[in-house]
Each structure stands twice: as C-alpha cells, then as structure tokens.
Length: 65
Image (cartoon, rainbow, N blue to C red; front, side):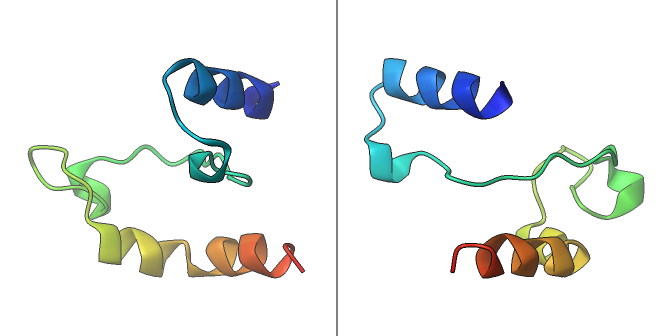
C-alpha cells in the first residue's frame, strides 16, 4: 500500500518513473538529535544515517540482482 501511494504521489507531482524510489525500508527509530542522525535543527546527517543503516542499505541493493 505504501509503495503504491508513494508512486502515485510522485507521479502526481511530476516525477519521472526513474526518479521514483523502487525500494525503501521503513524504520521504527525516531530521528532526533539524541540519536545522532539529525542536527539540532533536524537536518539530516547523511553520512551518519548511511553508517547506521549500512546493513539495511546493502540488503536493499543486493536484492536488486
């Protein structure tokens, strides 16, 4: 359901098919400054997020083949 809703939303807002995420994973952790995944102004810390979710990211990419 989420994948369908996400795709429909992206298409309604002018994204091309290649711009729409094909795979994603929902996480239960709340991203707060205390977790180290965002700054005090709630900006993403991309390198920290990538390191924290390295296994999940690898699994998403490995399942593409």
